[in-house]
Length: 370
Ligand code: NAD
Ligand code: MG
Image 1 (cartoon, rainbow, N blue to C red):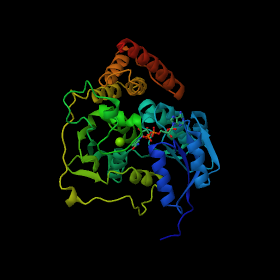
Image 2: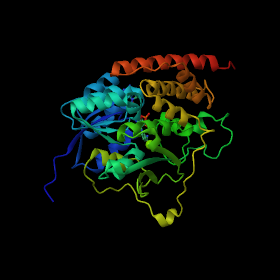
Image 3: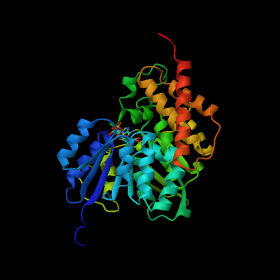
Image 4: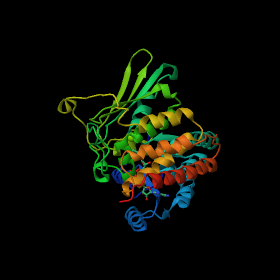
């Protein structure tokens, strides 16, 4: 073994959120290997300042513009993008253009701007290391595998809280926010309940692994222990399993390409006993096919899907929409969308703004006065 390297210098964008806070736990557990040099959050100034004080971090940002600046900051080697929503896209692009290792939790960056991120990486020399557990799993299973040997990949889904609920019409925000296996921020928790999260993850996987949509499948796996499966052309299946704990993929991304000892739990296959795999009920969860469809159409469709979904989820959480109205609003916006190529971030954000205004209009039309 060679002498240990200097600590990786990390900028954490979205440090006050679910992923951001878990990342700080990982940093505290590995003080010799990880050093936080900058923190940024959306609005919660007090929390981010307390985090900075606690860790001795001197640089703190608030809001998207600060996050973008910190993403390209020369003092950082690794940028963890744990911002929620398309608000994270410009920061991802800035990190990739500046040649950083981008530990990417913000899947919306790749959904809305997958091609734009790829170009930024090619031009700036940045690398994306996925934090999303399924993609972290798939990246591990794919490492060292000849591309021509890959038949398809399978993304697992817990199925969310309504896996076995026949009628989704009267789901409340409170019910949707109670996820059976993962504890996450509110937006992704609702996305997990509609299965839009899996749809976003399919598009994310398409960009990360450069696979056709026909090569990307989703199965329900209620135990959330197997996170991803790679099927090789000879029938071999490489399954990655790990405890249901985001600190594991966060640590793997922050310490990439190294593997360090961790204390985030382990699972006993015997105690677990049973791993189940079921098909997705695509009739009850139409959001998944909306995402596949937007992904296949390409261009600006995924950005429109993502923005409409963000607005619809907000509308649902604010009590303006019923649960099934989330995918109805997204479907309405996609039906009205005339796709365009999106060549740079500004074009993506124009589509994003258009889809948001269309979604708000659709909500106004759906809203039943009480
Ligand atoms: P969260 O809502 O808990 O936290 C979001 C963070 O982003 C907060 O720190 C917030 O202040 C910050 N933020 C919001 N808008 C911002 C803006 N305009 N500029 C700068 N910062 C802004 O969300 P989360 O659950 O931590 O999820 C973050 C991202 O990680 C999402 O893209 C989500 O899909 C992805 N992800 C989360 C999990 C999980 O377990 N929570 C798992 C996989 C992927
Ligand atoms: Mg995931």
